[in-house]
Figure 1 (cartoon, rainbow, N blue to C red):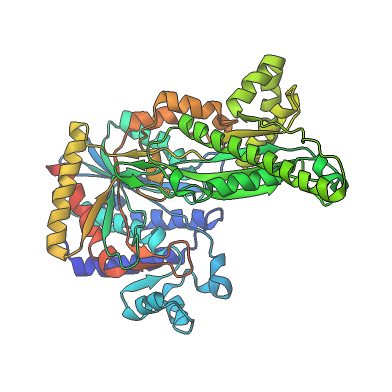
Figure 2 (cartoon, rainbow, N blue to C red):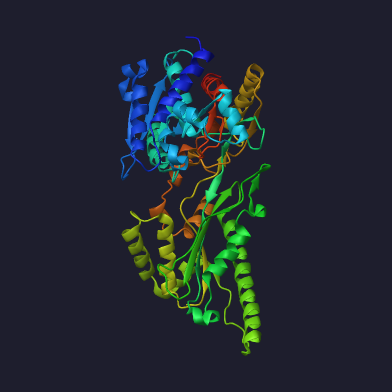
Length: 551
């Protein structure tokens, strides 16, 4: 059967729209429904009708909705252990941002008709009127990516003589929050690797890409994934009555100072191989006072999204500890300065305020308190995990563990405790240091040259996919020492976010991203570009699979 690009593009649009219509917002039953939709599509392929056992699902362990990953294994006519993994996530973010037209968010054609009557930004309006774009939640992130994989799989299933090896398709839920689907699926991949003896040559993800700046039309291919840490600060101040305000230490003041020094600080953006991450950004800042009264807050809590390319957990701790120390010092100096001015205006004798800077990492606090109380510490921390881990936001559970240690501390003075919270996302990229990786890169460069010559598209190969992606959990660059430091400063990590490090190391699948191309993912003007995503991307995936398996 000949690969008909025009026919494939039409099928891509139709299949993408069908998948978008299944509303699969993260954390809803829609994630179950999209898995059922994908499974039904697969079981409609002639090959899988004849080999029904080669399509299966894996229900996520202990999931309150019963969400599932979907797998399909295609084997060539000539047996081989070489395998390419095609994977994508099946959930989307919420549709609430669509406001009063959210009932159209997953109805692309009706949505586009409605948007003609909406006051849009000029570039959005131009895209809408061009006819080259499909709008709707999940169009680019990433139902069109699933469609591309499915159509490649369908074509190869009907032409099993054109390749030698296996294609494993996998669609996972729960990507948009905790990557719970891919993490839960790792044992399945490990089983296929060990028991079925599949040799994973590489993985191809189709997570979305788009312009990096206004007017950018480059088609980006990524050789790996940015990592992520979530550094958190628990700040214990000193409460007081508002009528004696200078007798207390406001933790919000310290939290604000930390935020002003970290939030979007470009100097803190990590860099490797000439590529720079987005800088840290605040994801949460709050005090922990539950109700109104005239007592000042006792404590505050904040945490940051921190992308990493190469910086290690210990260096992040050192970096942010210094910022915390400087923030603490500056707040103390500010308070003394303001108190001096207040005393002068009030005719009251000024006395230096008693506050001293105290900043600790979680591991330092744990070691100190364990030295005071021994195994009682682990017993009490375990009690918090037993009581809250299954039902509470894991970041809040980590905070409660910090609070418990501070209750046991023999020093009750104000303090900043720095720790890591959920999630931990590993970093990785194909470096070309092994013969296998060199071969993958050579084939990729060859394919890009051929495709660019045929289509006129401009391609660029970058190291790190700049947003979070499930590909992070297929291999990792962090060393055992770095993981150990992370765990020591991550309260309850093995319970709250048990990343199966050894399984990832054993799998060690080089993870590439051939993204769908579009704009405004996670916005109500989300849209996918048809000429590339529907016309070029499926061919790109199919041809790379053939190069990897045949050459």
